[in-house]
Length: 343
Image 1 (tube, rainbow, N blue to C red):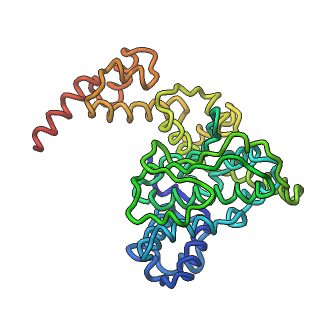
Image 2: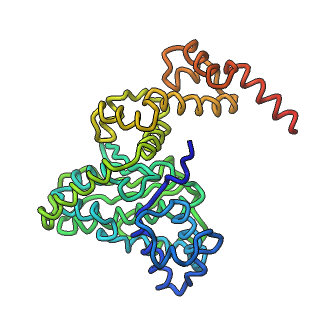
Image 3: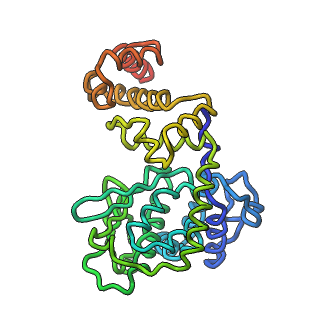
C-alpha cells in the first residue's frame, strides 16, 4: 500500500507557517525551496495539504532563521486555540484538563493524520506523548508542538495557584546555543525516550472556565463527523501507527476499536471497504518488525516471537515463511550472506 500520499495536515498550519515567515522577513520563495509545489500552496492552500509539504516548509522556515530554536519556541507560543479549527473550539468548552486531553487525543487526527497523540498517566504526571513522526523534522516540530500544549495549559489554569511545573521531553540531543533564557515556567529535557509533555497529575482536575458550551458542543459534533469521514486508508494508517508504538502488546480488535472511538463492527466494516482485516494489518506490522529484529541479530527466534505477541514460536515461523518464503533462521542467514557480499 502507498501510505505517504495519504499523510495530510490542515491548511491552517500552512497559513501559519507563511505568516510567521513573512513576519520574520523570510520570503515565500525561500519557503518553497526544493518543493514541487509553487507559491500557490502558500497563497491558496487546499483544505488538506500533504505532510511532506508541511515538514519541508517548516524546515525551510527554521533553517532560514539566524537563531532557529528561538524561532521554534516563538512559533510554538503563537499556536493559539483558534489555529486548531473545530478541535480548538471544542477544547475551549472543557471543564478541566482531563476533558481537554480526552478531546485532544480523540480528535487529534482531524487536524493531522500522520501522528498519534496519547495520554499516559502515572503517579506523578499525566503524559501527552507524540508518536514517532518524521525524525528529520522532529527537532523543530516536536518542540514547537509541545510548547504550544504547555502554553495552552498555562492559559487554562492561569487563575489557579499551582505547585510543580510541566516538563517537555525530547528525543533529540541538546543543540548548541539553545536559548534557555526563553524557557520560563516549564522545563525541557533532551535525550529522552519519547517526545512528550509531562503535566503534574494534581493539575488534571482543576476547574477551568469553559467558553460558549453550545458552540463547543457543535464543534465536537463536527470533529466526530470528520473522524467518521476518514477514508479506510486513513484508518489503516492509524492502526499501523498504534500497533508500531506498542509492538510488544497484543492489542485485540475490541481494544483497537476503543482506541479509535469506534465499535468493533464499524471498524471491521470500514476495513472491508479497503479489502483488508484487522488481523491482516496486525500480522503485517508484526512481521515487518520481525524482519528488522532478525537483521539486528541480537535476539533469538523464540525471543522475537514472544516479544511480538505470537502464541508460540511455531506460529511465528509459519506466518513468517508464508510472507517471505523462508523460515526466520534462513531469512537471517540469507540477509547476512547478502551483506557480506556487499562488503
